[in-house]
Image (cartoon, rainbow, N blue to C red; front, side):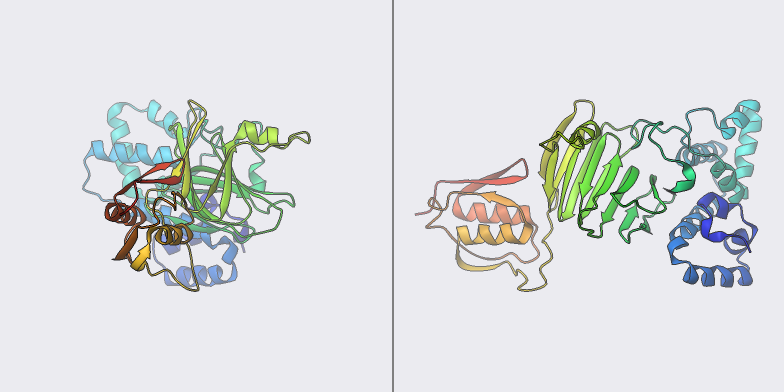
Length: 372
């Protein structure tokens, strides 16, 4: 039997038994792969990603115009191949006249899985500069797993340490088959959300373009799209530090005393402009209430001092709210704000006590003249 445990997405798309299951729906093949998934859970994500890509190609509509078909082919090529040198697909395109190229595009779209096999034959070469590692830093392919989500839906993956990664559409991630003893490294191109297993002093590092995000155990999101100079890291829970790769290398030196970059906690994000090497720290667009298994906040207030309301908001969302308690000593609030987003809660509270607020570097600053 083939060593399916070592198969990549490309290998699955070339396998006859896999095609019998996905393309032809043969019962015996379906039964085999269902059993195989149960016996090999660590490889299930790779198998399902190959299945998603195969079905996405197989189920494309057939009533497209020739021009639309060509655009579809070009879009898939961009998702599946990152080589700077001309790919075999491009050489085929150049070898035909425009009319024959249209015919070839139509045939490949109709054949479905054949197109997926052809595109995935291309091995990733040197990647655009928004990808994590430079050419001389990239590890051998046989030691790292490459996951490409060319579907329209997020793909959930389990990493070697048990951490979880949700890889968003049109994104690619690379990671070792086994993390080393010193650190856990992920290369990301595109967007992904991570739920990291806490492992003491072994850091979890996500390289996304020029940025490095370092965590010990948390949930966070990284957005680093190809061709865009602005990248974003947002924290769902826990704490991360974000810094430029050059600063990260400097921080690893024995004589380094200060770790540069930006520290983020829950409901905070940083936008990094690579063209200016500039960080912009701020609150996320919609702050979420932190998990509170006990004494869950109800946001019901009855003649509650304004300072007490602000303190409860600070605790619930994990955000810093700066105000002058002496100015607000005569201000109270009676309201039910359950299910109301944080910014709407702040607007309601400020309107009721004649105050205003602004967000500066992820801090909420309240200004008021007090209440009579």
